[in-house]
Image (cartoon, rainbow, N blue to C red; front, side):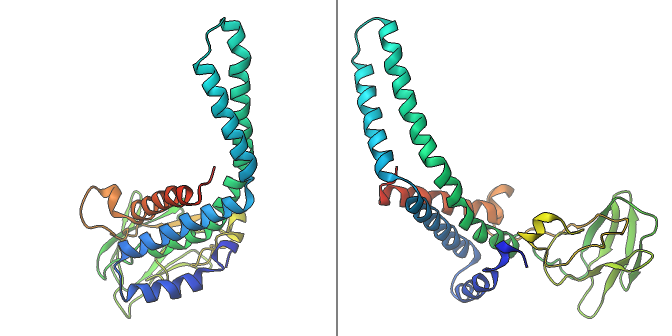
Length: 253
């Protein structure tokens, strides 16, 4: 389990309770609102709001002076430079807290992507499985049909009680059906200390680096264009709107 996966069991329990009452789109909205609220609270906690407020007021005063200025352009330049300097000072004060505020949100986003991203295929449906790099030492131990293609294999997704195993000359690399709806399994990388792959990892000394399974995405909204139907639109729309709302409510600079 990676660092960002630590609260995942708690999130799953909470979402399981919500699932008894709410459809996925409303649950995603709740997680998006929670993420927006956490972002603004962390930003407020670590940002120098009084200093930023004073700089903002000074910048507005400078802008009024510039708007009413009636002199030579050379005399105007120092005023413009002073106004820009005030803006950059505000940006400098806000940048660090803004970046810090994204860290706790990553815990939610990573869990949401895993929970709402992909679905397990229906038994018997055709699914593309590919590997990188392609190797001649790979073979399937199959209870269902496997068809080789230029890009990999088209397999019939195993039904309950069936299994489908991709192996190299030494050991099994992939066993279907999957325990988790994750579309890729790969060799372990440094970032897996932050985000672990629940399927495990390919052997480090093996020839195969990545195995990809073309899993279907979960449909959250059944109408509209394709880019609206997955979890990303519902979650980030709620996150964006709630972030703006909480920023205005807390009067943050």
